[in-house]
Picture 1 (spheres, helix red, strand yellow):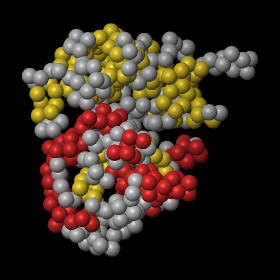
Picture 2: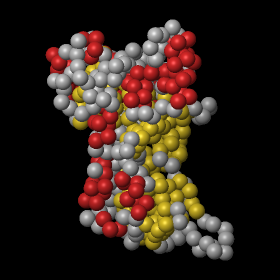
Picture 3: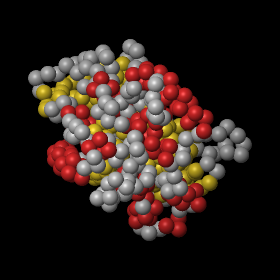
Picture 4: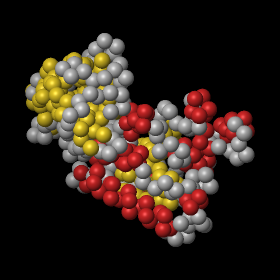
Amino acid sequence: MLKRFIFSMIDNKATTLSGKEIGYLDMELLRFTTAGSVDDGKSTLIGRLLYDSKAIFEDQMEAIERASISRGGEEVNLALLTDGLRAEREQGITIDVAYRYFATPKRKFIIADTPGHIQYTRNMVTGASTANAAVILIDARNGVIEQTRRHAYIAALLQIPHVVVCVNKMDLVEFSQEVFESIKIDFTEVAHKLGNNDVHFLPISAKLGDNVVDRSHSMDWYTGPTFIGLMESLPVGGDHNFEDPRFPVQYVIRPQSDQYHDYRGYAGRVAGGIFRTGQEVVALPGGQKTTIEGIDFGAESLDLAFAPQSVTIRLAHEIDISRGSMIVDAVNQPTQGQEIDLMICWLSSKPLQHRGRYFLRHTTSEMKCVVTEVAYKVNINTLEELEEDTSIGLNEIAKISIKTTKPLFYDSYKRNRETGSLILIDEATNNVVGAGMIL
């Protein structure tokens, strides 16, 4: 999928891809985050997924069995595989974001198991910020509730490309197709309003394993894929921006040796688009034009590089470039400006200060900024825009305007999640206080 997409983007010049690039494309990585209300079964789903796909070590399983017995359970509690904090195990809830890694023969996965409580909204935003897919669990007994709408809104706000709705605990509603179809209708209405475009629905029982890895014999009316089958087949090729070449410079490489005394390379990760040798580019903020002389991937030279590869780019001319600079296509350049509108998720217990000054970090560049306006706060329970209430506290989401001390080079978050996102940092404590998405 991704390979075909890349090949079409480079005008069918597939032979220019190296062996390492082919390998990179063959083993796709899917990042997904789980969301749902308290006790909807997020951690149980991930535990069942790891257990049934044979991705659990023997000593891990033994530890989970002991923990389940110590809590008085008659069955192995698979949720304990991801509820890693002591407080989580004692309360039976998820508090922090738990990351788990596993692979199948078809794909690698990084799972972010995020909390469902409203007071941990910031944790969900953190876990979902890099996700290709959002897995939203719904208790079949309760249907679409306020927390479901909140998580759908955050998925839409973060521009997560794919949404997978798992209607869980189907065993508690006698595996009813009518219940599943009713929930499907209700969520589709919410998704349509929010702009969640690619939405998939699955009836599952995470506790029993129905439709997680193995097909359910109790729901033969469902003919779609299992959860793991769907996650293995979700198309991630279009999730990266391959149209707008963006290369934030992380480090300037100048080896001090006789062998490489003339070497000057710019290391970083491609944030968007495709870069080719011989391509005319511009270095921002200076605006000097040059061409790409070479692209290095370790000791190997490449003809092209694309998002999200980490490479070193060599240019034909020596120009003023340092960390925080951005190499872009000479014709296709990002927006430049100092007055910026963005949606912000506030991550600090210290409220946002109107006219407050903060450090701003965007890709590899840093600068200072001031909050010039709070347009409105979002009531994430009703999704209303509250223009009268401009006090922004922990876990709240708002539209604000900022002014930076120097020009920022950016794309809208909707177009490019890498160059369209930023964080705000408190000057006094150096703590990250806000996660922003540029409008």
